[in-house]
Length: 277
Ligand code: KIV
Image 1: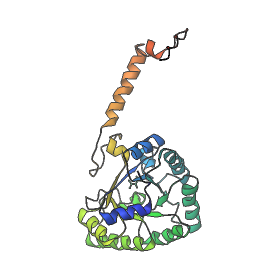
Image 2 (image 1 turned 90 degrees about the vertical axis):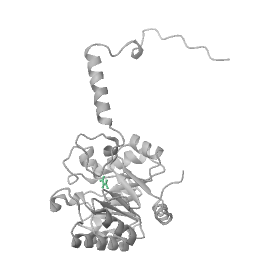
Image 3 (image 1 turned 90 degrees about the horizontal axis):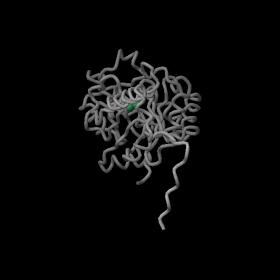
Image 4 (image 1 turned 60 degrees about the vertical axis):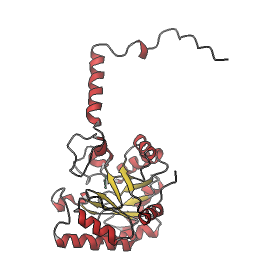
């Protein structure tokens, strides 16, 4: 089981091997992703709405993301660990962007960062690469721009919007991103971008032509309360299972069925079992 690197992902695209990517926000989930041989693990700023109870990704801070990156780092060894740069942690000032990305790499143990946007983030991508921080790009539905986009909607349906996404993708590739997330764009646009770039594209709601796929792990596992977006396929429905277990436990406590003798310690310790000869 070889360690996944940014260059390994480029090689996978060259060989036509599909890239698997999921989000994780804690160590046990990270260990599961490694066991399942997921190639890329993203500590997404989706931690904001998925785990921290915010309405969207806008409020999450570098410190909050960093806390989760450290946890995921402890659980991961094979998968490439990418940390999301939160809103306004990289757009305003290059020195601040370097400091913030540097913390995610140096303190958190991430191996790359992800930024949202096109031509406007190309200069900061170059700055990050100058200090050897690999960068993943993100185009299409960029959740940090939700207020400008007017909601979580498919992007790039109008010809001029599709053209802008293709141009931005080329600019990001030129700036040096090692991979590009394409979120919620029509399938034929994702196919065109994938064909035109030599770096891997990783789709989420972008059809099957991308070089890889990414999902929020809670969506895949059915842990969320709300119905997931159309592009999610649920591979498990864990929330009802968890709820039933919790209800059974509260009911057992109230009826004194828990704890039973098996979960209690007698005053006298049982005699130690004889060892086998
Ligand atoms: O924050 C996130 O989880 C993401 C993706 C799922 C691409 O950016």
